[in-house]
Image (cartoon, rainbow, N blue to C red; front, top):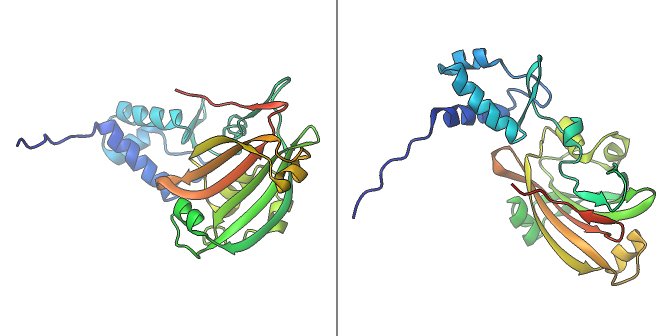
Length: 242
């Protein structure tokens, strides 16, 4: 039986991993400029071209943001281009708009076996449970249930949520140091139960789109599970592939 040949990672990928480690350790925080390519090349003792290739990939993956004539910055949910990155609901007519969020409740609970598995917790660990309705053009369109690890969001409360002016992910980033990097979703058609029907002002058993999302922060750490029920009578869910 032959022994597999050892595999070697290209140098730029090694530099990419080192830069990611600095992002994960919060050496450079969201919105802050990272050192120049020349400075990073000196730090890692590689060529500037190697650093540039690593940064190009990190920018393509939306970890970093290049600004012409200003440098390279850690990506943030506050950027205009990032506002709709995790919001995929599009109107059948007109331009995409930012929804109005109405908090129903924000409370502490114990993780069920399902939530613990999804968030890599132990059953019974503390979680924060948020319920809210998103409205577009004064029409309730999305009902969401959101589960967060209690240890990461120890001080999150309804008061903080209601007072903050900005997106939920921006709140998590600025107030709790947790940035959502990517998400995995499961999408299926469901019939509206009594709660969803009342909150979304649709008939019981009306067709809805159920979107279940696990969002990950640095290091592939799951930090949010949300289940959303979407009306699609005037909207559709858009996804981009490739």
